[in-house]
Length: 347
Image (cartoon, rainbow, N blue to C red; front, side, top):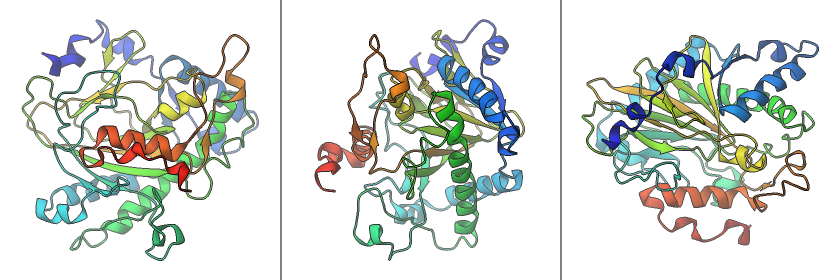
């Protein structure tokens, strides 16, 4: 059955296949040790060119902050549906997305025929109502929605958001160096409140039928994704060989993957690896994905270190906001046709 795509294409030796996903220590670089950035860039480059996923350790985000984020996610998803619907996802994908309202239609990995079996709560920068961009209704520059009756929820969620956002910013020099660019190359691209989204996912116990997925096979539309997972398994990633592996939890690490923007900027040199989720059982599964991407109003271009006479740019320059809205329009039912008007013509 298609719903068991991951199992049908599992490697004969799962442990050996999983071992291809490196565990990379960011600690020496974050501590400012001499030569650490160059050594780290070599490890990151190899991971990005060969598999597109890596575990990172010594990342600096306290475990108690991660634990609290999961507790806050569970508190939110335990609310009655009527309460969650008051925070309905807006046109810029901030707020609550209920079950059966998203599909990986944009995916080139697998033909989705059914909605994803998960519900999500999306959070971004917590801009106040009088923030100039929010007050002006500028696309992709809104604020958050918060539930009533959950004291401490906002503080807990935003503490985690800030921690992983800061981690994403601190990681950028390693990826710049891995691509042969100056360490500060991405600074301007990610300045002035870059596009940052925290997605708190809940996969309820589900008896899967044909072509059902918790999240259908897809690639992310981010620059990079920082993923925290609970102990309930479900994630699968597709190796370049076409085999699907189920990466285990490794204490003290985040699982990081590259998205389509990294692939685009590297001219397909770095991989945006397909992955998905299948949860078939009687346990609730929770995960928290943080998507770190450029400022929506910056132009995305192929890097000069990734082109030459025999390998010209495969992508035209594009405003990141337009790429986001195209992705939203394809994948979320409430967004259909929303991305057809290019934002660059209005700002």
